[in-house]
Image (spheres, rainbow, N blue to C red):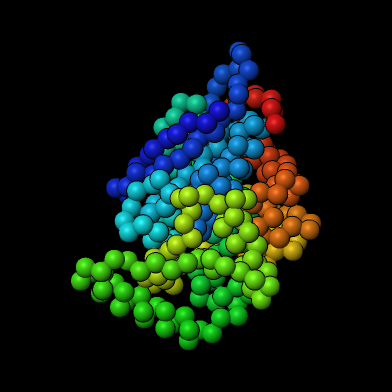
Length: 312
């Protein structure tokens, strides 16, 4: 069952879809719940919603929501990428869940996909209401933009973009519109790197595309991203558990591997064999493996106040 919900976040309204299981007659009590953060450029109707539906079918309340400045959530300029605000959005989503009578406030976990994995980890380091942290295809957007995928970017090139961000702020102060850039190229060919082609195949085709996922970001966001490190305090998650899921073929798998190495524990890196970064967004054979692992993880670490039998 899905309910459209709206909750406050730093003076903005955040929009979400709350998925809950079909409850058998005679079963009552609050549910364990999971907050789900979507990837960069994504919205709640895409992979975050897919995981939310699957987890709800297995007995959890699952909240997929649009980050501030994205999708149906508020915030101007549209498509601003503020990772600190994204982490705050996660905590605001947790706050919303604690107000619901059908949710166990002591049984809340978090799941982040792609950059959402970085944001929920950053949030949970200081928000101890999040009792279990899991990621799928996690990415630190700070490192991704500073260093490039695989740490291949020339540092001087990034410094130039940060300097440009200051000039763009001045232009906006003088009345110009925020400058938007594509996240992915609108067209790809055989010369395009495989990871980028796979992203295009998910976001820019009917496979995973959505009208509110517009392949855009505000370029001056880079000066906020420059200061951000998703996993800077990952050791502060302990003694709460951490599970990071990555495809064995994912170009981004090093983010999860290195984060788990840095974490104090309990911690686990779970590899989905044969999967790339984007395979774990929606391809059934790989999502099924990830959801099975997530279900075992959350069942073990979130207090289950309601005995719901899995329906999917």
